[in-house]
Amino acid sequence: MTTKPDEPQQPPRRRAPAGAAVLREDVTEAIRAAVFEELATVGYARMSIEGIARRAGVGKTAVYRRWRSKLHLVLDIVSALAVQGLPAPDTGSLEGDLRLLYEVTSRALRHPVASQIIPDLQAEAARNPDIAEALQKALREGQDGVATGIVTAAERRGELREGIDHDLALDLISGPLYWRSVVIRSPKLPKGYLGALARATSEGLKAM
Image (cartoon, rainbow, N blue to C red; front, side, top):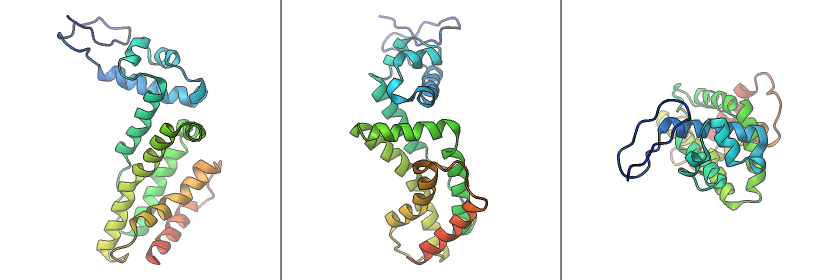
């Protein structure tokens, strides 16, 4: 039996090869983008497959072909954040790498969409262990590789002693900025805050 690919309800359709339904990548990306916008606009509790499909310009069937429910959809997207990660800084110094990491992370966390989605998902995580696990993975593993790379490079340069506790280092590197940007949601960082944080964190790591 011949099946049809998903279509964004616009251009002329092409018949797909026989077999399983063809999942078009552009449709998948449109749905993912719609999820972020819906989360930022109405929150997880009020978000619906109908609203996602309408915002993405596709039918509900296109969404259900990829995910069984909005929970599975959100879990998949949040988990994917851990895989994407952040660019690894390479400035040649521990403090410089930390400063660049904080600048990139701060911009990401203070983006209007992210600033709405993360607190909302944290609230849902308190009620849903699946979301809690996915969110923890995204927030921790998303920076784990980058922070480990920063620490390892500093060890090679002799700025940090070899064998430093990488888990404790990750907490020290990531904790303060997440606390201010995500937990207490400070509307604006004080002037020079990121530079001072990078210096303080660098000294703290060297003392470990």
